[in-house]
Image (tube, rainbow, N blue to C red; front, side):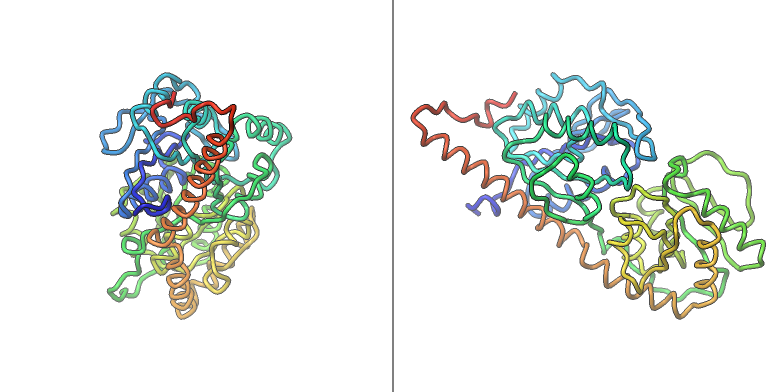
Length: 389
């Protein structure tokens, strides 16, 4: 494999959020790293860590600070030591750096500044329908400061690309999040008769996830005599006992898969600020129908005949959509089958090669720039991997 897009690469994958905490960006990065390793690449994840990480291929940095922004907690590397980042880049001697959420301070900035001779790919994950003025100004300022000159860019959705466009004015390739369809897959055994089982996955501490709207809708349905139960997965404070509701907190991957296979319906009541909806994709791959809010990031993921979309911040509409599907088992089965087919397009075995095509673009741009510099009579030798830092 001699061409830039086929030879095995040493990739440094930089994540600005706490690698020890749950979250969509970290989940994406870990799974993408695994998929790239399956293609033969050597991948090292670099990110802040609130506790030591004993895991091959992961480098954690101290200095995590929690910042509440964009409707949720963001445990970021604001107090990270630049010297530690510089040393990790020199030791890694990477062929390419993949920077997730490149506008988030401060790890991605240090990684960019300390690796001038290394090609970059950036991925934008975030979305906000109505970002405040100070955030828009900050994006433009920091975007102009840290733009890697020869980088190529990815966004996980059109919504994320639009949001990134406040700071990134060059082309962006849309590549959605991936899912392991060998792990998240439909149940095989027939289900015995029982109440319809709802599933919610998300941080209840983040208002944008709409947990209180689902709780309101669930209590309305129970009060109306509907036969249903609710499994709640994700971080959040203790909840009082509510009939039919089971609170699981953060769970292992195996437990999450098992809960999907036991469920009849995923409910995602987010109020906004979602760029994609990974929880939707995992439910789809598991053969579940979906009830979710009609927001930009979610509309891009769920097929029209696999979901019921309702207005955000409307527990009554949420309850009505759930009630319709409680009473219609054939519709749930048809929606689940449609969702399984749609999820196959997001399998990591298809997504990772698409990401690698963007790597080839960045590598090609860097090679072209080095060739142009080498052809100049006034050129200085280009920075190689040994000069990082």
